[in-house]
Image (tube, rainbow, N blue to C red; front, side):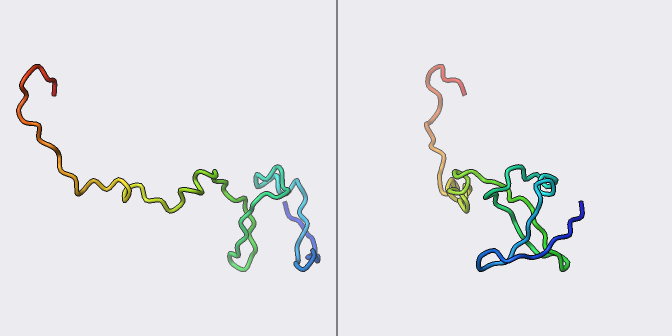
Length: 88
C-alpha cells in the first residue's frame, strides 16, 4: 500500500497520521501506545513493530548464564572405590 500524507505539528513535535489498515499490514492491530522501532535506511524512514519482551526477560537483559555457572574452578570429589552394591 502506498500512502501520501503530510507532516503535521503534534504539540512540540512533528508527526504523520497512519491509517489502521496500513498498520495492520505490518502486524500492528491495536496501535495506541504500541512500541515501534523507527530507523533510517537508504534515506528512507522505516517504521517496524518492536519485538515485545516480557518484564522477566527485561530484568535478565545482560545476564551471562555461563559466567554465573562457571564451574572451571571446581574439582570432582573422589569418594573411593565402591564398597557395597552401589550402581555407577
